[in-house]
Structures are given as structure tokens and as C-alpha cells.
Length: 92
Image 1 (cartoon, rainbow, N blue to C red):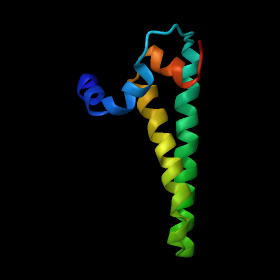
Image 2 (image 1 turned 90 degrees about the horizontal axis):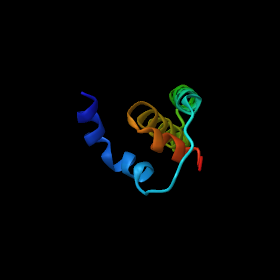
Image 3 (image 1 turned 120 degrees about the vertical axis):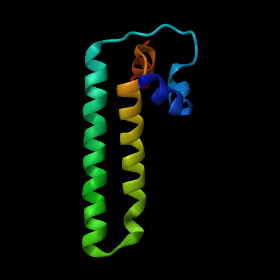
């Protein structure tokens, strides 16, 4: 299942997994990345709730941006290699 999801999200993962440079990985980096992704998803959900509540669809740009950041964090956090996680933190 993980390999199927990795191939599905390969365009996102390849950005962070390419290259041969060295990296420094700590397991806490992955945990923090998943927490940050959850926080951005909460921001997106709150923004969506406000859009529905106030009927202001023009405010949807922040929701799209926050959800995109959350999705990238979750994809790299759950499916990415140690190198991808380290590269998203710029750990070299």
C-alpha cells in the first residue's frame, strides 16, 4: 500500500528526495513535520468554516494555501524517506 501511495505522490516526493548531498535526519523532524501539517490543516478547516459562515468565497485563497502546505507536510511526513524529511527542514 505504501509503495502504491509513494508512486501516486511521486511528483511531490521527487522534489525533496532528489540529489546526492548529505543530510542530517532526526526522528523528531518527522514528528514535528506531521504536527505542523496538522496545524495547517486546522487553519484551513477554520478558514473554510468561516467562509461558509460568512458566505465570503473570496477568502478561499488562504484556505487553498494552508491545505496545500498541510498536504505536502503529510505526504512527506508519512511517505517520504529520511532524506526528504531532512531536506524539507534544510538539514545538511
